[in-house]
Length: 578
Image 1 (cartoon, rainbow, N blue to C red):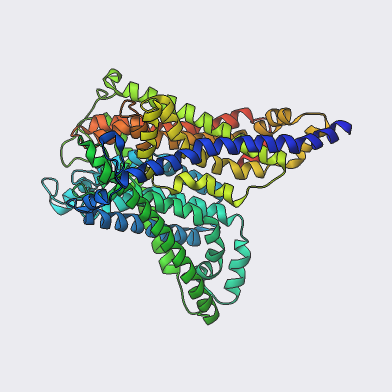
Image 2 (spheres, rainbow, N blue to C red):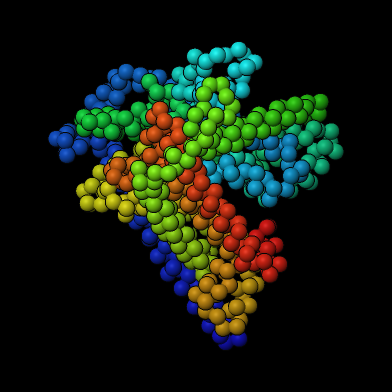
């Protein structure tokens, strides 16, 4: 009893120290780099970049940016593709949840969505380019029906309207928004609300719109903002699927940052500020829509409307989502198909001959890119997982829940456009002599890996039965022993799942690797994006297949390792499946 009392009395100070240490690490390693990067970008956007002899504050960089040919079109494309993909993804995800909730378990839904969540954006975009191009699988399947003797002269990829980019973004975002909504629904009494609404004569869809979604929205607001920020500032998918001349704003800025004329860094920095302003304006627009929707929703609920039916719209959303999933699955298959194809003439659905030649020469580049990707993913994920465990353990020991500002801190790197601060951060790292090495890339990738690892681990950690820790404490186990012998073994499945998510996010990083690595560290993602514009689909298929295969292997390990280790522990199996 005395040992347990001593443990309790020492736990709070110990927890406060650990929590303070983690918060200090986050401030120095996460907030400070973003703030410093934004500051450096803002200075260059205002005309101050002493390295090239520009020392006076001026609006000339902004005027130079606005005067660039195609700037207005790039701005319009960014808004159309970013806002359009986000809005359509939310509508489809809500429709699928309303139509299918209760007809499929959350575990089955998670298994269905995992392949689409695991696939890196660039790999999915390359697969979609293979699938949707005039010589892709879809055109080959239609060729006998349409009488095409050659690929049609239609811009189905890199189209001026950005439709291919919208489709690509939706293939990745609909599963993510679906998973977020499913997670939020676990905190709401959906069955009771549906039963009450149906008993009053309202259809399933109307109950969802009027009763359930107003409760779900506050729980998914931040993830939706992350989706919106990504859609408005995406680079890798826009390079592969988006319009090329003029491109979206983010791609235009990347070209300016990479131009041989270093004076173009000034308008590029001004453009990065414009990009950040676009995202902030989109957040303000989302907030205004929420306020307006709240007022309209109250009026609509009071008005009634039992005769209305939203079921046709729900099933249309479900059908369109199923079509998106099918397109995504075929896109991933096309990567493997092209990596193994040797001769594939038009309009055959399958290659005439197969070959491993594209895979048989690792010395030509993919082996080095694979090893770099593995090293970066392992280091970044290990660092992020250590910080997440330290943060959560510090909260437990200090007996304090997460504050609102801490939640914002976690989401901060995902809400700020990457191109808005990575250039400035690269300038800062150059001054410190850190740019161009593994340390700089690991640090930059951890800015984006840590939030996802933290989000994935938080709920399982807080759901752990506190009686397990109390029993260990009553037997004299100290806080560190309880952590390593009780908490971590019981949370093995969530830990490995968070690690798999971290690996997937690390593998997918394009801009942080390109900027902070100064182009010297080749990864599967940077090479795949570069090769996506080449004429050899076989080599591109190899890189993209490896890029997609690493996250799949990580998720498979996260599933198999606990299944093997816990095969004789029924309680832990139930905990993993919960």
